[in-house]
Image 1 (tube, rainbow, N blue to C red):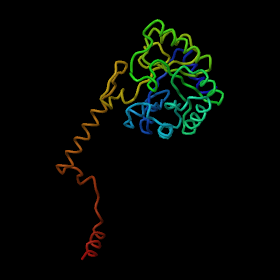
Image 2: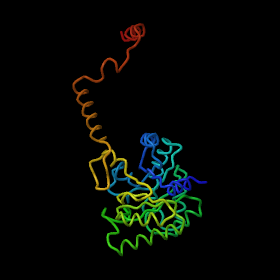
Image 3: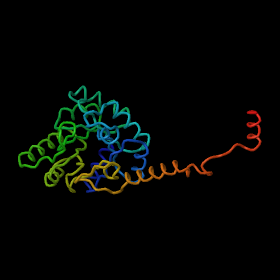
Image 4: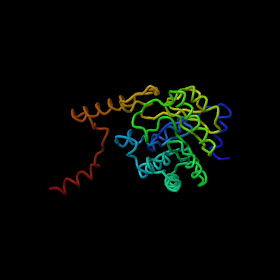
Length: 270
């Protein structure tokens, strides 16, 4: 039984999947120790870590670099890695890109949009596949709610069913109405992972920087479980004050030469 199959059994038992992003080894290690089921190395690394203006700027090299870091921090974790913008336009390109992420440590590759042919190509190449519909940050300029009309909701349901027929293992449902997400979850074999899509999905994902308030942005779909950004700023401000006022480093933060070595050193200077 594959690990993706194990997660499908969790869906059958009604057990919720806990998914969270990570982009580095220490964060990945902490998430596994805290009980996260799946780590997602998303293209959100671009705007949260790399200082890019949008997810479109993230490269395959960026993703491989951060997936490898997460793998080193969490050797036994199940990792989903994003295929960046314009790296899966054809079946052949998708397979090549996925192979690079798998070599870096990804157990599963994720891409945006209703492209059943890409799912089939990746499954044929032996990859676990996570799809992503609703808000697609790589392909939509604004971060707006999706599926808000009957026609739009029907299209998203049809897309989800087509991706499931093609063999997807997971699907992220982002910023879609909770009723639609519930209907998709009921209809699919694959596990649904929601973000801003209500409580009826098989699992939930958040960006760790949003959850911990490492940045200044906040979103309706997010809950801040900590104020790490404020704590970090406070710690850095205290450090800066202590350095400027001569309180750091103190005696206990350093060491001295042994008396005989000090004497020899000073003799050598004379």
